[in-house]
Each structure stands twice: as C-alpha cells, then as structure tokens.
Amino acid sequence: MNNATLHTLLNSMGVDLRHYQGTELHSISPVDGTPLASLAANSAAQIDVRISRAQAAFQQWRQVPAPRRGELVRLFGEELRTHKEALGKIVTLEAGKILQEGLGEVQEMIDICDFAVGLSRQLYGLTIASERPGHRMMEQWLPLGVVGVISAFNFPVAVWAWNAALAFVCGDSVIWKPSEKTPLTAIATHALFMKAVARFGSDAPEGLAELIIGGRDAGASMVADPRIKLVSATGSTRMGKQVAAVCAQRLARSILELGGNNAMIVAPSADLEMAVRAITFSAVGTAGQRCTTLRRLCVHDSIYDTLVPRLQKIYAGLPVGSPLEKSTLVGPLIDQAAFDAMQTALATASSEHGKVYGGERVTVSGCEAGYYVRPAIIEMPTQTTSMHHETFAPILYVVRYHDLAQAIEWNNAVPQGLSSAIFTTDMREAETFVSATGSDCGIANVNIGPSGAEIGGAFGGEKDTGGGRESGSDAWKAYMRRATNTFNYSNSLPLAQGISFDI
Ligand code: NAD
Image 1 (cartoon, rainbow, N blue to C red):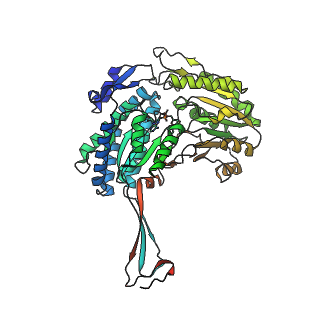
Image 2: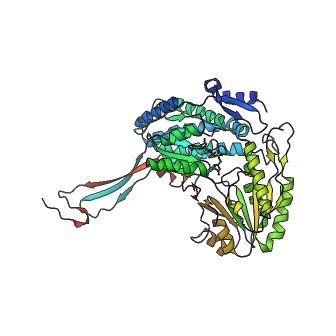
Image 3: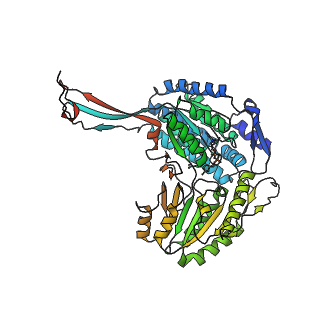
C-alpha cells in the first residue's frame, strides 16, 4: 500500500487534496501506520461561514418539491455506484476495514439513497377527524433546518449517508464533522456528492452539504450553535453525554447513536452450525470495532462444551492480516490506543478469574507498524463488572447459563442497549426474547447475530446507547417538524371541549 494508490483513488473522484493541506490533522493508515495526509483543521471563523451557508441553503432547499429533492439523492446514489470500488478502498486504507466491509459500507450508502428516493414521494401526513362540525384537522411534516452530523471512525461514510440522504429529501441542509481519524473518506464522499449536485443543476443551493474538518472542538462548536436545529452524533457514550447536555441547554433536537455492548444467547435447541458462523462474524468482523459487535456470549450449559472449544479452534485459525488481502478476515485495530485498551481489558478479565484465549499482537509482514491482534475469547465464571464496559476491540466474553431468565437478565444488565440476539429453534424462547419481558435493546434478533443491520429498519438503541433512531422505518420524522393544522369551513366558531365563551 502506498500514497500513490490513495492519490489515484482520490483523483478519480475529483478530489484535489491540495485544497485541504495543513498541519493540524493527520490521517494515518491503520493498515501499516503510513501517514496518508496532513490536513488543515477548520478555524472557528471557517466553521461559522459554513454554518451560515448551510442556513442560507436551507431557506431555498425547503421550497424545492420533495420528489425533486429525491432526484438529487438518486444522482448521488449513481455516483456511489460508479465509484463504489474506489471509495470502498479508501475506507479500507483509512479505517482499516477489510475490503469486503469497505465495499459493504458503500453499498449501505447506495441502499439508503434508494430508500430516500422512494421516501421523497412518501412524506405522508395524516387527516384527523375533528370533534367540531365543519372542521378538518391535518398533520403535515415540514423541513426542519440545518442538520449537523458528527460521525465516528468505524463507519466513516455510511453514518453520514444514513442521516444525509434522509435529511436532503426532508428539505434540510447538512453540515458534517467526520471523525478526525478518517477525514479522507469524508472528503472523497463530499466530492462525490458535489458531482451529483453539478449534474442536478441550480435547484441545489450552495451550502446544501457542508464539510468541517477538525477534532472534538470543531464538533463541540457545531453542537453549541443555535443555527443547527438537529444534531445527529455517533460515537462513544462519553461524547454523547457531552453533546446531550449542550443540546438540552439550548433545547435542540439530537439523535444519539452511542456505544453498544451486545450479547447473544445460544439456547439448547440452537442450530450450532449457523450459530458458529454468526458468532464469528459478529465478534471479529471489523476487528471488533462495530457498535453492534458481539461482545458477550451466554451459552446454555448443555451445549457449552461443544460450542466453546469449537469457537476457540476457529479463533486460533482466523486469518489476521492486511485488510487489502482478499483472504484476510481480521484487519487491524484503528491505533495504538485501541490496542492498549484491549490489553488492559484482557488483564482485568484475568484478574476476575477469566480464562483468556488469544488477544496477543500479531506481526503482519510489510505492515509491522499496524496494530493487529488475534481476537480473544474469554471464559468468565459469571458476568463480571468489567463486562459492563464496551472495549472497542475483538474480545468475546463467554458465560455459561442454566435458565433463560438468567441469560435475559445478563443481556439487560449492562448500561448500553444497542443490539442483541438469540439462537434457538424453540418458538417460546424466541418470542420471549423479543417480548416486553425480553431483551431491552433497540435491536433484538432471532437466529442471526447482533451486527450487520439492513437499512430498512430503524437503527439505534436504548439506555447509554442514546435512544436515537436512524436509517429506515419512520426515522425520517426526526429530520422534519410536525405541524397540526385545523381548518374551519363552517359559518360558526364552536370551541373545542364544548367551551362556551360568548362576547
Ligand atoms: P468518539 O466519541 O471518540 O468520536 C466520535 C465523534 O465525536 C468524532 O467525530 C469526534 O471528533 C466527535 N466528538 C468527540 N467529543 C465531542 C464533543 N464533546 N462534542 C462534539 N463532538 C465530539 O468515538 P470513536 O472512537 O470515533 O467511535 C467509537 C465509538 O462510537 C464506539 O463507542 C462505538 O460503539 C460508537 N459507535 C456507535 C454507533 C451507533 O450507531 N450506535 C455507530 C458507530 C460507532
């Protein structure tokens, strides 16, 4: 891997990196530690200008009919299809995901564009029966304003697309502060969007999509700005609590997509072949750096001694290596801090009487400066305190359970509430798991793992995961304001609740 490859890819998308050059922000490839680019962070004055432009753009964009707004998103989807390979590869180079997952991330962007195009003709309101004669009530959804998107390193482009594709058809403008660890993927995505804008024509105002390059401070100044009507922030629970406090102070809306600590229950009747594949993909995919990564496995006592040794054997042979190699299933961690956090978590688990398998650093030839690890499985005596924390690395804690109620209690006992799964062919167990007394997570799956959501459903979780929902179902409503209108077409003025007020 070298910088020439990166520059060729960026050029193919119309990016001229010279416009972004500076000294404040460094994009380092987790593949082999190569510095990819040094960029300028936007100043407070530049951020202010961008927000002003986005606000002016909103004034115009909200007047463009929604199906026409959908056309812009359709064109963007076309650009993504054309450049899928190149953008997927940049995701791999900058975020370290294996190529299949880099491509999958771009496919997810294409999928949400398709969804949003359809949605642009389906922003339905309601007609409501009025209690008064000669009256009609209705509810309509109207554009909201400037939407601020703050994204994390591990889904460097898809998260923006989940928000932006919906926001654009809803009539909003969007300002994006990507992770400081993955600015290049954002610059490339922005360039593709601008290609779509150029093809769309003058209906798309300048400032409709703005990009802010910077670190936490840049994100914080966006969050505090009253011109931003909705803040959609994806990242750690620590970040979400800070963002939530600032939004609450100015009564702004927020969508918070924060940390997960996801469990799977494997019941006695489970199809173990399927369970093994689902566990492995969910626990080691993206090197354990997904918010939906499987982190806790509750295995029924009757199958524990069959399943767990099998997983240990698979883990020992997992191909760990450069994410650019086709055969690799486990790529690098994002950086040294992630590696250190993983080693600390392994040591803590040992001190809690956990038996650790794997977890050691792996040297990959030609990528010696990358932080590669063998995914770890830890057999725990019970669900201990350290298992309540999300360590963003491939660590799978395994506990033995005897009855389903205990396993569900463990599933729900952690602060986070993003995703969860059960493997069972027992209908009673499956229904119990997804019922009101089952999993308390935003996502509860049966016979598939907790990670790898489709865009059609609303995505997000409860408790420390932040409570936000993005992507499919009716998540679009968060990007619009609801207005209730009552029309009186009679010749009198009856008051609601039969109140008499004669003057
Ligand atoms: P992070 O919290 O360090 O950073 C995320 C983003 O927030 C970055 O752009 C950062 O600059 C910005 N930021 C940090 N502090 C801020 C503040 N006070 N105000 C405004 N912006 C601020 O997270 P990360 O390490 O990039 O990502 C990993 C975390 O993200 C994990 O906890 C993971 O579970 C979570 N995540 C959640 C989802 C989800 O949908 N629930 C998706 C992806 C990642």
